[in-house]
Image 1: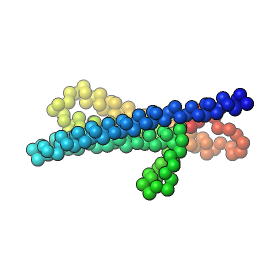
Image 2 (image 1 turned 120 degrees about the vertical axis):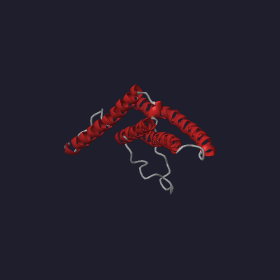
Image 3 (image 1 turned 135 degrees about the vertical axis):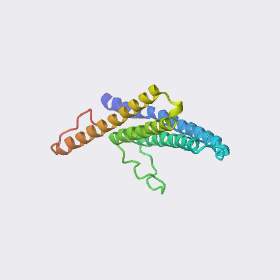
Image 4 (image 1 turned 45 degrees about the vertical axis):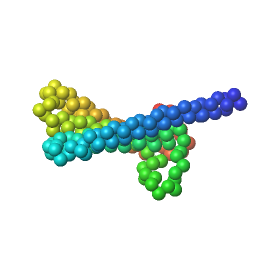
Length: 180
């Protein structure tokens, strides 16, 4: 009886994560404020801006959008994987991936978004070469390539883990405690 109560307390402790996800929702709202600030800054000056400056401004908006997408994925998938299912199964706007992204899939989507965001920062630096030092550009490339290689290695590890599970004997064997 003590063990059962202890396990119930541990299981209920997942709700301690709920405020984290609520905080991420607030962060998403903050990104929206920053996005609108950038948009309102661009719109009145678009006719006097050079093509390069407009493109840089649009890349900033795309960057903020990717960050918002990343936050939303973490909020939805994290909450559903670690706290509770979100009960919107019959809602017409429910994303197809929702409820299907496990922890491994979330990691891959996360690194892919980080690579995309890093790529946008690198593109902005290349488009603004006159204001970018050689050392800064070198570090941006190194960081971007680190993210790319990390993503490829993560995907390979997930594939190997999936291949390992596919070859595991079927039956009453329990999965390892370290599996996701």
